[in-house]
Image 1: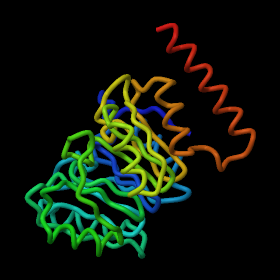
Image 2: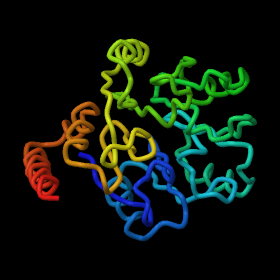
Image 3: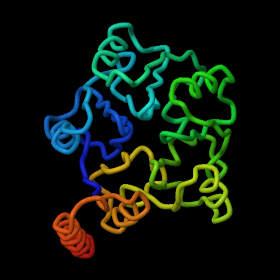
Length: 250
């Protein structure tokens, strides 16, 4: 199931949040409604950690992580690093990284096994990424765009990429990642898919402007809600039908 939400007046929730299968980081300064959306859906399974990175709240663009670890930029203060380390599960590694391309979330996309990285990322950063997140790295572009972390998002179940990604490129990427991919949009046509979408293996969150059609594509490719019972599926289907009618009337 994918839930619509908003950070203050922004639909780019992926800019302010980092979601994995082991933890969720949420930027400080959002509304109580925004925090409660994540806590009500996630807190029974994984910790929801309120933090900043280098006194900035755009933590989704500054960090990259999975269930094995978390990579943060060199701008992260000692206090922030200690707070995050204390809040993460014991088996999750955290590493501060000296990287010229410091918006790590824009230049790296990963799940628990594979990472796509910016072609110009430092070799040292690639090695830290491999060691900390326990992933295999591939230098890649998405539809000729180098910001792979902005124009793609994938879990261990599936992935969404820039709408202009060719069928051939989708097949090549799918073969690398070993998950099904689909080209699509978020927030009523935005191609910066990772800015408006957060997913792990069982839950999804998207910007408030996301249409019912976009949500149905997301729920299908990421296999969201498929592990729940029939009652939940019926509720989700009823909600999708209702949303479709609302979208049609707008």
